[in-house]
Image (tube, rainbow, N blue to C red):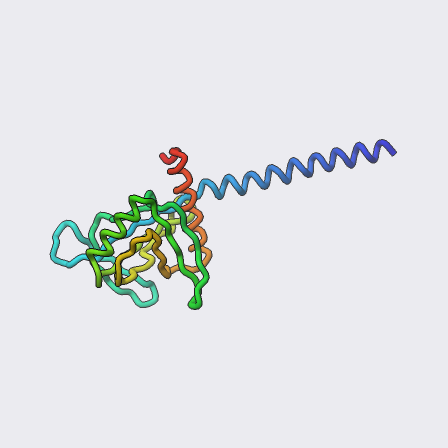
Length: 176
């Protein structure tokens, strides 16, 4: 009888070790994923050297001229999440205090223009494209930006996961 009990305990210990090792591996893999986010302001087409024209919406492409330099990046993101909406889903970005002030300034001074959003996600940041261009209709003073991206829900979750990982690394001071 003691032989069976010892054998059972060894199997239980090995199973526990394997289970713990596999669980840690997937968690650390998720923590390593990062995403990039760039928010640009629509510009007039007359400023040579400071603008570029980008194509949005894969199904029915639309060209928009934007300023080369982004006004906000993933460094300004505090948290991100995917929201369920009646039309499908949206991404909500919560900005830092500095990002909130910048967003408020640009949305107050550029009504009627578009805020053009670029995202990059996936393994080693290989997946990326222009995601959305919401029209600026009012001043956004709360630092929360919601938009419906031109991507599927799985890619949206990957983007959000990477943005949240970047914000955690920045908060810890470990972002390289």
